[in-house]
Image 1 (tube, protein in one colour):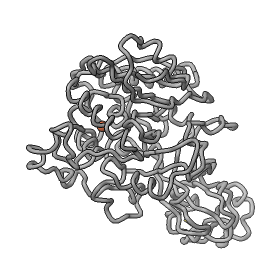
Image 2 (cartoon, rainbow, N blue to C red):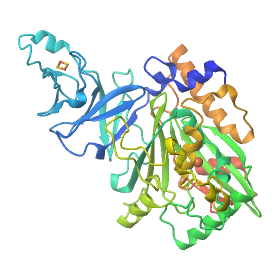
Image 3 (cartoon, rainbow, N blue to C red):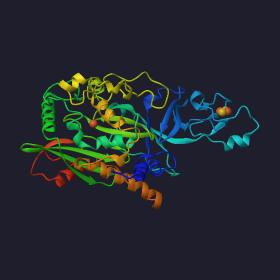
Length: 446
Ligand code: FES
Ligand SMILES: [Fe+2]
């Protein structure tokens, strides 16, 4: 449970807020490169950390991110002409380049002085391996963009998808740090049944599929995992242990600040990371990155990752795209239609009666209200990780505000483990396993 003040501190990320200041110290993933497919193409509305922005790709292919409104008299730059290396406002023709410099002021040609003084709000962008990153912080010389395991690999090694969530980032992120919900929300009624309601999107071999069935079985039998949490210099390392008879079944999760979670996938699935990027206090863009270090995905693997039941692309697809921020990424199964919950399926097939794990999560996290009121909750032992996550972020906000201390993890390259879901002998201690997995050196599985 948090006090009202702590809840406000945790959840408000707009300009001028303490948590907003923390977020702005880290580079933000702004958009996929594919969202701006062509030079001089249509600009894109983007909302990041409570700020409305316009992204565009200029005649040289360079991406710019400007404030959404023209510095002259505030007309929307979304409607601007994207031409000859800049955005030209349709109201009076003022033109701005990707750095926000005013290149032309055709309705006041004599006012060269003003032209040199006017600057559109703009944020520095770097485009790397299929993602446009932006730095919205105060440092004149920002830190290097982060290395997150997937950010460095070529776009062909990744499958990247997004969904727009209508709730605050913190409660969405908390879902990834709560290992006990998978035994309920995401469970089929018969762990061995092919329900079609959960499924695993993956590139699994036959051998792996039998291990997945085993995992389902353990999750169904032990629904109250033992949670251990280690604080690292970039976030948290979490182990959830379930009893699997002669062995333990472990799921390891890593939080890399400010909002990256490496969640355990099924055995044999590619590595993956969820990104809970705050658009504003009441909207979050969740990115799902599935990736391989060593090679590109084949076309067949790519299509299975995109369309399997565990895939991030919703089984019913997205709503027709709108040009609002994030408007291309709203699933058809959403709050307005109760996520298409099927009560018949809930009796016979799956715990939730909702198709697809992402819709199941959304139903719970969006349904908490746009900003969850944490003064009303009752936490138990399996919520230990959320408590740690909140402490980490709250203390980062206070430290930065009162002492100017940089938040943790900036400039740190976190070790990303090679495997995250494993059966291990009962004799291996949590401390030993955590040490080995954090160094990316998993001991041989039993
Ligand atoms: S408002 Fe954009 S040029 Fe006047
Ligand atoms: Fe979930």
